[in-house]
Image 1 (cartoon, one colour):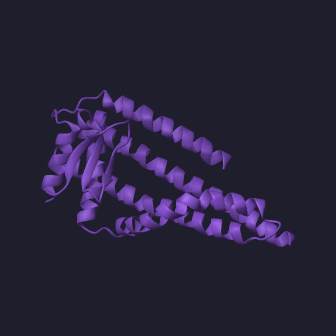
Image 2 (cartoon, helix red, strand yellow):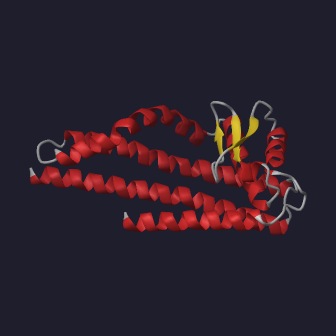
Image 3 (tube, rainbow, N blue to C red):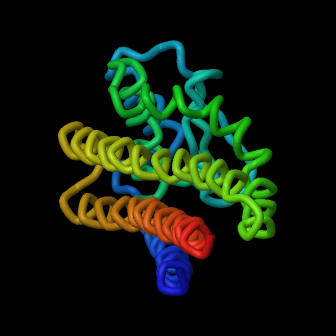
Length: 221
C-alpha cells in the first residue's frame, strides 16, 4: 500500500509536469481543444454531443448521460499539443458510447451500484475491523463492496487505453498533429493512462489488506 501510494504521487506529479510542458508547445494548425473536439465528433458522425468548458485543472471528462465532452479551461481554449491530446481522448469516449463499446457499457452499468455502496462502504469496513473479534460478517460485507470498487478500477483500464488509442489514431490520420507533435501527444496520454493503472493497483492492494484482516480474524476464531 505504501508503494502504491508513492507510485500514485509520482505518476500524478509526472502527469501534471507533462501537461504543463506540452501546454507550452503550440499546435501547428492553431486549433483549440474545443475545435479539435468538435471536429473529431463531427467526423465520427456524432452530432448530439456538446463540447463545454468546466472549471479546474485536468477535470476533463465525458458524461454519457448528459452527452457532453467536458473540457477544463486550459484544454477548451488552449491551442497546444496537450489540449489537442486531451480533447481527442475525451471524444474517444464519445465514440465508444456511439459504438456501444462493451467495457464502457459494463462500467456505466456499475456506476449506480457503486454510487450507493460508496456511501456506506467505509463505515461498514470500520465497523467490520472493530467487530472482527465478535463477528466477521460486517467486514465480509465491506470486503465484498470494496471488491466491486476494485473491479470498477480494472474495468476502467481498457476503457481509458482504448479512448487514447482512438484519439491518437484520429489526430494522426486527420493531420491534426505533425510527427513531432504526435510523439508529445502520445507521451501525455500514456502518463494519463498510468494514473488509472496505479489507482487500480492501489485499490487491489487495499482490498487484499482488508481481505487479510478478514481471513486473520476468522482463523483466530
